[in-house]
Amino acid sequence: MRQIQVASGTVADPVNRTSLEADVVVHGAIGQDQGILLSVGEAKWHKVMHLGHLQRLHRILELLKSRGVDTSQAGPACYSGAGFDPELRAAESRGEVVLVDLQRLYHGS
Image 1 (cartoon, rainbow, N blue to C red):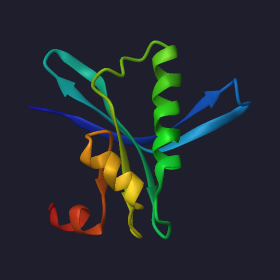
Image 2: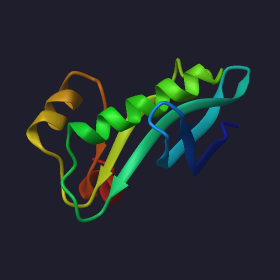
Image 3: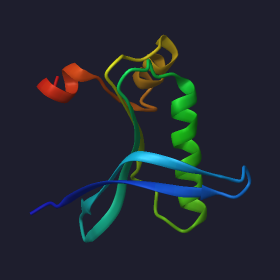
Image 4: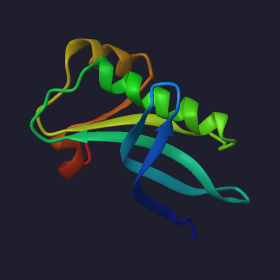
């Protein structure tokens, strides 16, 4: 049986003297590894998301990797109730990010 855990989390960014929050952090099982990081995401209800959100997620993944977390299977995901700008949609078409809008969230398509 495959187990998936979803939570939120914060990672310190000492270079920028701040911390970055991930709204959605997904861990799951792949093969024998029971706790591999699968995705790090950000959720916005009333904001159109843009490339800056994707850049933040890449920074979070960099910080986690520098701390020894296996990020080889992890991908960024953006969740939005208001949609995504054209540049972020283009990044999705290149396979750089998973975009989840209300249609996909509630209807799976």
